[in-house]
Each structure stands twice: as structure tokens, then as C-alpha cells.
Image 1 (cartoon, rainbow, N blue to C red):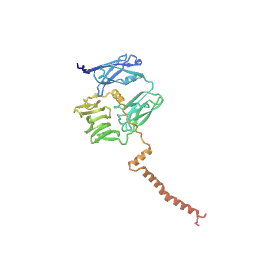
Image 2: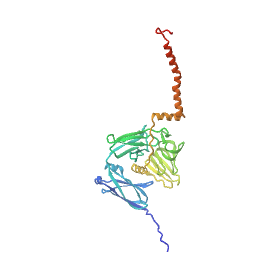
Image 3: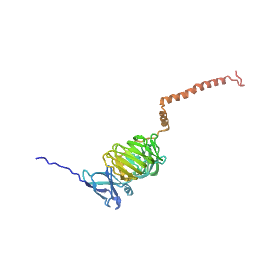
Image 4: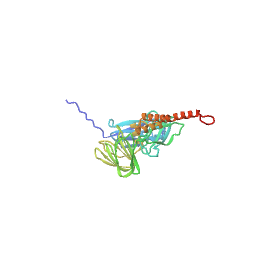
Length: 373
């Protein structure tokens, strides 16, 4: 007899059964719970019961990022962890989101450049090495449960010098703005009355009105009769006007965000075309249907926390370092500068020292009456 053949059939729909742990501080309140379908959305939202229970039914079978709404947790001075649930392995899955009390100080503010311009991609690196991204649309940031003792946090953004920020209980927790200075190697493309920013960390092929992004970040706002065209291996994006941000990093999902205006997105692999309106975002994936979903700060923040993306700090050089950098830019090396300084000191000495010796000798041969010997 032939051995039996097993044929696995995946369920088309699934559900997530969840509970919030340590809900003593909720006082019979409820917390919104998010379930984001990985990798490209959409998201689902529901409120927990007063006992901390929640249930997502009739979900497409996929992986989901599940988390409690951070602003709602803030109102109860609580924090919660994120969980990834895979319904492809278990169509009916259980998940527990552990809540913990906040004991430290809170800090908040906004990041912009020294001219008050928008910086969408920015991160804080905490003393323990954890990464905390800012909100893409507004540049706002907020941290809770910061240790009471003063600690140095590092603020970094592609295309800008980094800064240190000390957060402690004896200093103001609110920072109205953190102003970052743009790096000199950052590429700026004029876009009507606005501009498109291409940081030095970005790898891109740039021609007039076209940016082929290989890796990194591009953002801008403006308008022009000629459209700006952004392309990756996954998609081509055409804009006449608006405010946008595009991120494409190796190993992560590429995302295009549109905050103002309208954009046309075409899949490079399938030819599918969709139109995005203000407040939409879309994941750019090969052989994957383009789907516009609403920009939700809580969702984007949760996704960026799972990626843990940041860049190495870039510190503004000292005056001495800037001098040597300018000299190197002019093709002058250190040996040439030292030689020049040596000549600068030596040549006057050849003239001044003999003159002083002659003058001293003449003074020695004068009589008190002022007549020469």
C-alpha cells in the first residue's frame, strides 16, 4: 500500500485573541488596539474591554504587528510591548501585550533645521542604544519613562550634523525645537518655490527632474510645471506638486509618503498604476499589488521601531578641523601648509634680524651730544 498523502490547506481567514497584562491602572477604561497586516497593510483597530480583552475576527491570513495605542497608554502612564502574530502558522492565535508603569520623566519637542524647515527622517539614540524615531509628518517626538538621572541622547538625521540632548528631571522636559545644521555635501534640487533634499548618505542617480533612488532617503516639497520623477527598482512615482518623503533601505520595506498634493505610482514589475492623495502612503514591493493606505502616526511609529533604522552620528568639526578640510579641498596638503608657515616665519626673520643688529650697532657708536664718533 502507498503511504497516505497529507495535503495542507491554509485557512483563508483567521483571528487574533488578545489580552492586556497588568491592567490595574486602567480603572475600567479601554485601550485601542492596532493590528497591522505585514508587510504593506492595511491596519485594523478595535477597543479592548474593561477586562483588557480584545478580538480581531475574520482577518486575512498573514503576519500582523499587534500593539496597544501609545497615546492612550500615555494617558494612563503605561507602556506596552509590540507583538508579531503569524496567522499562516496558527489561524487562531493568542497574544498578550504586557503593560508596565512609567516611572521616569517625559520629554517632547520637534526637530527641524536651523531655517525652520521640515526634516521627516530623524532618530534619537538613547544611552542604552535603543532607537526612537520622530514623526515623519510633523517632526514631533515624545519619550516617556526617561531615567531621572541626566543622560545624553543623540539626535541624528540624514544630511545633518548630529546633536546631543541631555534629558533629566532637573531640566525642562519640553524642547520647543531642536535645530539641526545641514551638511555641506547634501544635494538640493530646486522644485519651483521649494526644494528636494538628497542627503549625502543616500545613493541615487540624479538628472534633471529625475531621481533614481538605490538606497537611502529623499524628501521635499514644492511645485513645478515639470514633474519630479522618483524611481526605484520597485516603482516609479510622478509628482507635479506636494510634500513627500521616500525611504528605501536594504533589508526593509520601501515606503513612499505623501503629505500634500497628488502623486501617481506605477509598479515596475506589473505596470499597475495608482493615484495617491494627501495623507496616503504606499509600500513599494516587487511582484506585490500597490495599495494606498492612510498615514497613521501610531502605525508608522510602530513599523519604524521594528526596523530599528538609524545612521551613525555626524559631528560638526571644530574650527581647526574646518581649516584643514578647506585646505584639503583646495588641494593643499599638510606638508605644504607647514612649509608655507615655515617660510612665513623665516623670510621676515632674514630681513628683520639683520636690520635690528645694524640699528643696535649704530646706537653704540653715538656720543652723548648726539654726534657720531
